[in-house]
Length: 184
Image (cartoon, rainbow, N blue to C red; front, side, top):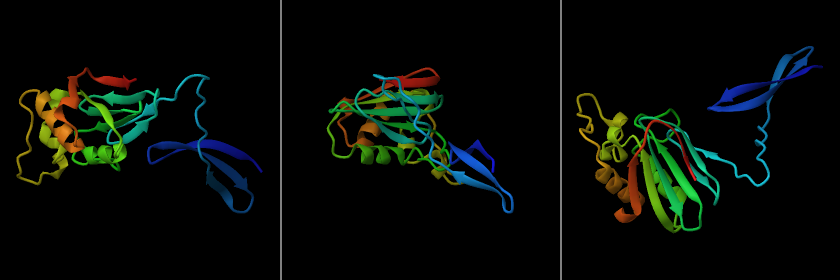
């Protein structure tokens, strides 16, 4: 009996699959959990948050937001040193949060923990503050979709503060160039 390990994409994750030849029945696939990547001693694993996702990083662990182009990232810095992040996308990625649901998901992940700061970074000029309460996809035929005529960092800060039930003074907004973004 021969076995061959191949990688299969399933819901955006690569899983190793073992294909085993069985003389009578043919090939059978068995999914096995992917082993964790080795992290050098003393190093902290990076938490990767892609479009439409919310995730948490323990104290000392950086967050990587890949391919921030027309997106906004929202990083909540917790009083205990950890971070909870969200990668808000103008258009919904299938199976992930829309822009009008991502702040509620982020707030739920933060829970009742004390918040030190909230940092919003990304394509500020591409975002209308209203996208956090009604996603572009939520507009019907003939409905006017609001679009930004100028960057509105103050409006975005108010929308994020309101969506997270945080004081406005705790929220900062910064326009950053396209690319991968790492928050330490």
